[in-house]
Image 1: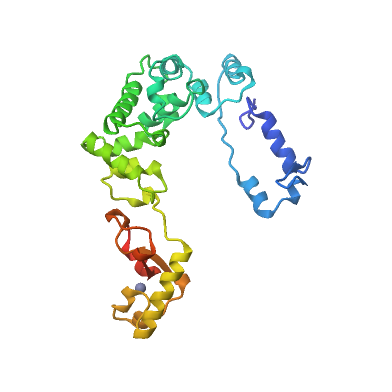
Image 2: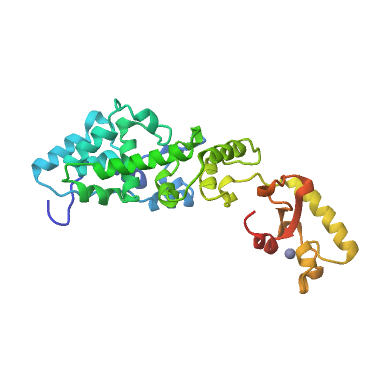
Length: 314
Ligand SMILES: [Zn+2]
């Protein structure tokens, strides 16, 4: 091939189909069962299609190497996923050893790993995670650098350190732990010491808290010292509560001739007597959730948006 031309090794059918659809050669069925040509799609959908980036790997090699890749890529007609493709691109001793450890469904450790890592050994999910963790998400770079090494010591040790750390800090295995970014959390927190019994109690306490909408965030919340409540997605006040508290505050404020935002009312500027509209206010926990405050009418206070933001994390 000349310098300016590339040969499509894999994905030719996909590329051709995209091209044919965009140039109006065929229609697709939309959500309502209607046939839609590209030109008939809404402008934002057209734009979305046109602006979608495709991942392309450019390979260089001898004819024999190219044939070898082609063979790998076409295993049983199942399209390769990202990691399988990387395994093909960086094939060699390192990948062979890494696959023997992480992609072997007979490995007795897989059951333990599955508590924390989502996926399937055969589809390279454990290998992918191990590489992401050790390389801080620079998988391709890492594989390229280690391609010709004949040991996977660093990869294996790092992965085991993460798994051992998680299982030591969190002694109970909860289903929400599976698939979390343990590599990132390990980097951030493995030097902090935790008392597993206290951690376990905290997990149980938070799991029993019906105000917490995001249980997946419980673990990072605890690791970070129970400060960042954003991770937990605490249940917010519903519209009925907001409207009722708003009406009450407004009535009282008007009677006193002060602002209906209690913080504006005690301030010393033009907003001191301002009556805010409901849409310009937000609900706030009087006693913060983290100190046991409920998401109830009794614990709700409407503040103007500026003051609510100013109160920050609660
Ligand atoms: Zn205010």
